[in-house]
Amino acid sequence: MSKQSWSLSDNLELFELSNAHAHSAVWKDEQALYIDSETGIGTSVLLRDEVSFESFRLEVEIATPHSFAFIGIVFGATDINNYELVYVSPGSDSTAGEIQYDPIMNGSSTWQIYHGPKYQAPAPFFPGEWTKLALVVHSNSVAIYVGDTDVPQLIIPNLQSGSLGKIGVWGYLPSYLRNFSVEQIQPSIFSSSPTDLKQLAEEGFITEWEISQPYLKNGQSVPKDNWSYAAVEENGTLNLNRPFTSTKDSAVQVQCKFTLAEEKETWLTWGFSDRLKLWVNDIEIYQGEWKWDPPHSDGRIRFDFASTAVCWNAGLNTIQAEVARDEVAFGWGLSVKTGLSADERS
Image (cartoon, rainbow, N blue to C red; front, top):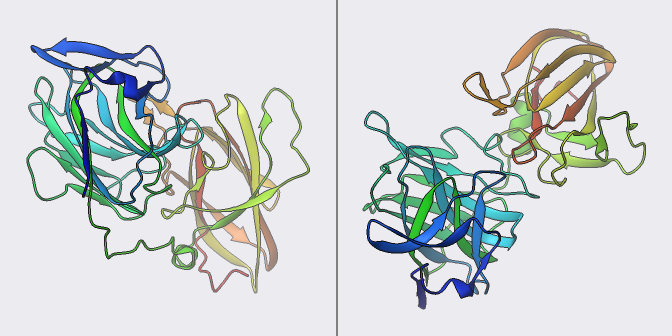
């Protein structure tokens, strides 16, 4: 099994420095890579050559002098706008640090889509000290280790783009990284499990949407042609980062149709980011905004963010929505539960 190592201080010519926010520096008398990105999706520093094996262990030492920063490892990268990302943010005297799985899709982060205990976990990372971050990566999964531990704090069993591609490091706000390495390991005998759309539908989620092409919110009309179908993610969210690049003030129309054997009243629940208009059977039932605006809102998509009682028709029913985005660097999408089982809808 092969292993490669880089100090990240004297061999940066082997990496793609995507902007001026990454350079060699000294912190606490130690040479390291310093990243001070403060905008967008942070700064990725990718090894120029791709990794040629599907299963490997990545390690790096990370540190931040401040209480607010995000530092991580990139893998499975096709370019600087599409890659798998795991990062850690520091804790304090009263709270632990936190791991976040945040795959970058079409130039946007997705932490507002992938959140909760499946994608986040506490970790021993604190300002002012060097800490080891390690990832054990297989073709469709990653196990995450922070500090000196043999037990992963978080396992992601279903990667969104897989392990193949370039590797590197990443930072947002003042971050130091050193001693980056990759080591080939034996492939895992376990396979990933595909999204169970049938189970999600049984729980009441709308699992497939018809989606328009994006249009600008400055009066541009909804495109009539080239609508497409998209399935939801494993958590029931329609992830609009996946098909579309990031454009401020853009919007899409989405819709679904189903029939019921008889009239029925249920509670309809939904969550979204960033802005939403929602219609049921051509009647507008909601209009609102939910995005990153701390401490008032975090913009995370939760299926039970809002709700209303709906009396469904016997026969054809429609759900339509306009989902618009303000936050170019963050996630946008929609999650809807009808209160109807899969057997009731056809």
